Amino acid sequence: MNAGDGDFSSDCVLIVGLGNPGYRYQLTRHNIGFMIVDALARHFEARLNEQFKSQIAKAKHDGRDVILAKPQTYMNLSGEAVQAITSYYKISLDNLLVIHDDIDQPFGQLRFQRNRGAGGHNGIRDIHEKLGTPDYARLKIGVGRPTNPHIPIEDYVLQNFAKDEEGQLSEVIQEAGEAALTFIESGFQRAQNEFNNRSRDGA
Image 1 (spheres, one colour):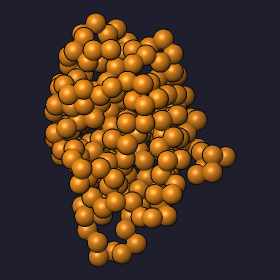
Image 2 (spheres, helix red, strand yellow):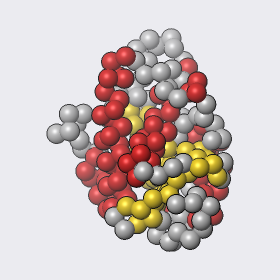
Image 3 (cartoon, helix red, strand yellow):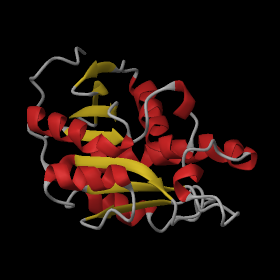
Image 4 (tube, one colour):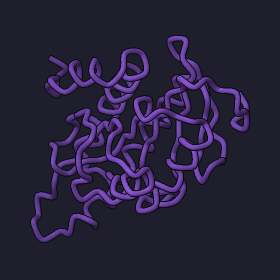
């Protein structure tokens, strides 16, 4: 589908993955949101195109229109892209899901959340500011904290995943993709109930 079309329904779901553009950031912890959106685009066989300060793709799932987005503003200005897309397509905040890394959860843990503070995440802080509210859904992907307490958090999230984490990364991305699809199909509450209580082994 052409990313320039403006004929999507008012019930359209917007899935935003946060990250930083450019090769140097491609495999860093801070870019887990980008990785998940890329996986969803492959699932939908949808091509990402440059628009609204983002790479966006359109698809359909379970009879609903879906927009995937990777803001290209760099993390700290993510709200500029999210605001532009939600405004143009008249996206209801109930249909917005933002996927991002979270250092306060162990590696690979998924947690849906809404109407909470930014927790020190600059991308989320900017989205809160630009939308004027924190009342939208987030899917937080745990990346853990550095084992070395002397490593600044801002450096840690811009590092590549550790070798043992890389071996599990495809599984984490797949589960996060399934969580996003559940959000599209059944909404926030169902997705939260199903995925927030899962252990890392899927039990």
